Amino acid sequence: MIYAFWNNKGGTGKTSLSFQTITMYAKIHKKEKILAIDLCPQANLSELLLGGLLGNGAGNLNSLYGEKRRSVGGYFQDRLPSPFTMPEIDPHEYITKPAICNSSIPENVSLLAGDPIVELQTNAIATLANTQLPGTDTWIAVIDWIRDFIQKLNGVYDTIFLDCNPSFSVYTQIAIASADRLILPVMADDSSRRALQNAFSLIYGIKSPSSIYREYSFSTKLLGAGRTLPRIHCIVKNRLTQYMGTSSAYHSVLLSIENDVEQVMESNPDIFSFSDIHDGIVSIRDFQTTGVVAFAEGKPFTELATGMHHIFEKDTQISKEYLNKCNEAMDNLIKKF
Image (cartoon, rainbow, N blue to C red; front, side):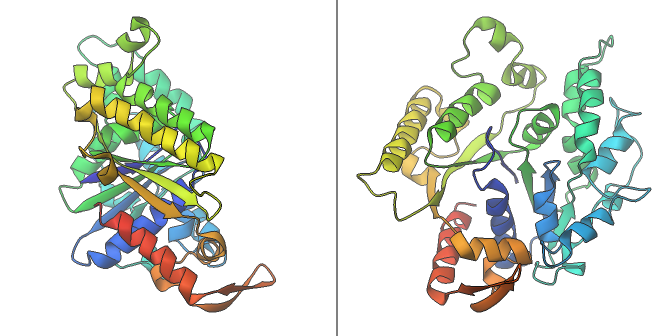
């Protein structure tokens, strides 16, 4: 199964959620081989897996950007001369094992690292996708790049997680087109609500303002090429706090998001992997200081020690009670997989 974390909005805690999900899932499913693919040019997921801020995650990530780039950017770079047919490459040459430099990461996790060079490649990729070539659907050939990569791995990995950029750029479409399921994080704000509505339009063509948009939409082109669209696996109400009680404005926004989802479920049930909205929505509390420390140290909550942590010349206390609550929240999400 291939899961993609995405929303058409930044700041939803998507990458922290991806990191904690991947590592906890791998710890629970020790016999599975897990691949994380970082399709975000900021490469924050990769830096976390490779050590975080305090574990030389940035340095370990930069070491992958040599003459032969061991990253998604390196793979894309090798696809540019052969955009419409998969070249004779060994996909394992682009993959690294985070546990080699970060002992907190389970041994069964592998990584196709993110790469800022992907932003530089975007114009070339988009141009190739829109090239007119008789007998070739150039758009689907390019959109299949990650799909090609995964197929070349010959089923080595049991479960694959994609961390996507909060945009709908061509490399985000490449990621989403390869996924079976989508995880959509939202926050208790109106911009998250609009982003979720936009996600329904961008991926599934729902509520497009005119038939012109539908004709050239992602869903029309993907389905027209005989592909299937990923189904929405769950919507994560992320970074909830004690201030979001039933009488708060935040709660009203979250209810509006649920109502929006229910309306889409009634008209388009096939795009969801769940039939009851309560099975498809997960609430995750704000990780607060515990999340900051985990992010800095590049550690899953399951490996984080309670007590005092020295972070950026400041002592920070991690309580056992709050760490347990973070682990319980993530465990509730993992049960959806």
